[in-house]
Length: 401
Ligand SMILES: [Zn+2]
Image (tube, rainbow, N blue to C red; front, side, top):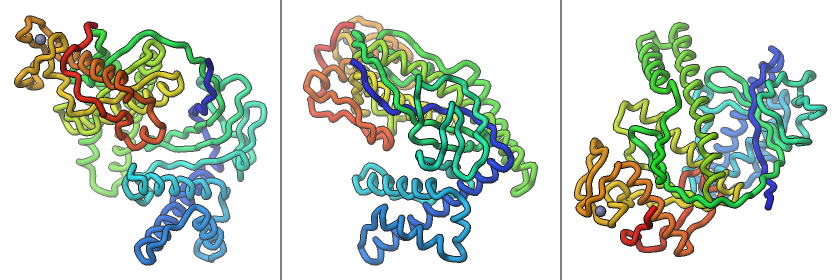
């Protein structure tokens, strides 16, 4: 079986000075339009209890462009501005469906700098991409090939806090779905990044410990510099660069890992880690780990969907660490420093492997009760559990693995 999917391919590119200026202008206009539309929608709702939709905001955009103070919106391609209104529409749809918080303003410093172009706003010829309002194609570094004959339907240009430029091309691709026989439970690690129910431990990417130390040092350096000074800006840039390197390595690591898990296993069970106190550590280390977890889950969700696998997300209150995976007895206490323990039944467990086995067993019982569902794409953005817990907890009769 094969499955047609939309797949994003992201590359670095090096803009000319005029391209960089055009894109910086476009990012600014995108942010302006998004914020103006958010104000309009908020006012309509709070003052008149009126919900305005995408088309109303589109009409507002046309009106704004005719005013003197917003005439600068005409200088950039109109497509990214319309796409900003669509993104706001999605944000409101998610809010009204209780999947997300109320949309917030885009800030000049903190928000992601990006602009989205649809087919009418770019030209794709012979593997060269030219955006609206530009004369030359982008100088893209093709670090991996696009699928044979692929042609992008949407192009997103962005700049990260380290100042690097990226272009993401959304293309049609075909995934061959080959059934797999494995089943695996995954535990969020403390010492290792992940532990599998097979006993395998997956460690953090190489050099990450050192990079984190560097990051902490760079952040302390920022704090020591005077606010608003050039030195502070420079120190901030160093932080952004180290952070970018950590997240890049993480992403590569997680991509390889999730692809392997999905290739080898028909069923994958993870815990809902939304609020779990996983890492008792420095705030920073915590932020990196939490981000890695969200990313791991997002990657796993869409890849499971592509490859036709069952991904089950089990309840975060499930006592995976304290439960003996051999006999089902519940241990009293399990402080974080206990790395292995022996149950009354005589079985000695590695803490994380035992937890991963329990997670797998819990997930398989969800599947057996018909509660196992493939994730929906929408839920992956908001981090909500996609598997409903409708069955009683399986604390006994845990499978021998
Ligand atoms: Zn036991």
